[in-house]
Length: 186
Image 1: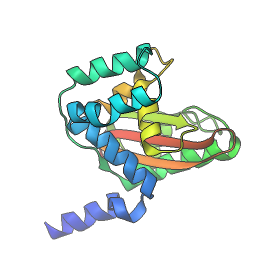
Image 2 (image 1 turned 180 degrees about the horizontal axis):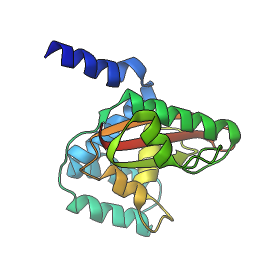
Image 3 (image 1 turned 135 degrees about the vertical axis):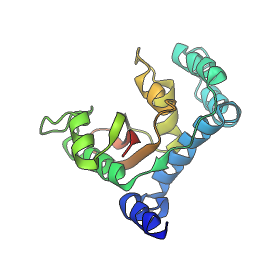
């Protein structure tokens, strides 16, 4: 059992060993919405929506509706392998000023995530730009304003995802960017 624990720590590390403070806060918020959607709604989503004048925004209203129907699920575990992939992409986008899921060399996110992290099962990626706080990044992706598919929200609220990598880096055009890479398993 000890050997398995050592291998797990080597592959996935601990949150304290490789994540920056703001990235840890993003993880805490993601896990707050996943493990207790009702409490997250009351303590974070509703105040955020009110403070930002989004009460009439259809995406914000649909988020509140979705959170009412969301059942509690498992917390995401931070994986060093996914964090490394997310960091690579956040730095790539940040230095070039680009946005999106495709690397500047043309590599699609699913190829980048699978080959660099060895993730298995379902995978997904969220990218957010221009925010200054962890809550702003998380709420931007949960509200998903202008994204008809609500893909970022669905990724965060997908119970099959067990692992995540999070990287926040400077961005040439938007000041900041946050990349989240999700995986079902390794």
